[in-house]
Length: 137
Image (tube, rainbow, N blue to C red; front, side, top):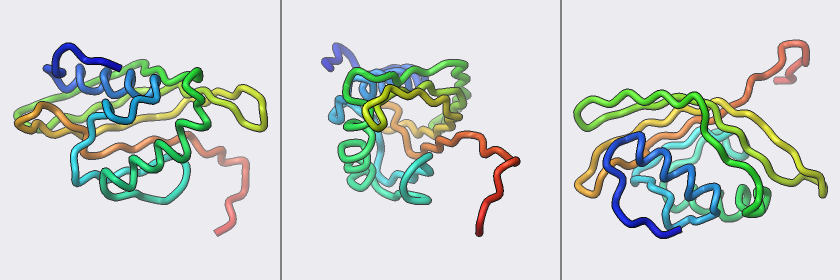
């Protein structure tokens, strides 16, 4: 993915991030370091840009295949000063056991403004857990 200009607003950064993920373009994903991620799969939390980069490359991008779905909707961004947060829904699609699958996730992002523009410093994605299923603990 080639960018002609740096994202101006926090929302621009988020939309650029989503486009980069959809294109499996790891170099264009706009994370800061330090970074804290609560992801829907894998570890309970991941800290640091390098660790999460490997998660994209080793887990999500192979599942997504570059042709799957990664689309934001109902995005709401609140920015003030050098801090912003955003909420929305994220439609993801990929392949499991040779079959196409899609999930809708809840997404919350925290951003900070740096000299290079807005950067994501926290990502939390989740999906509702059905209460009719017993969770062993």
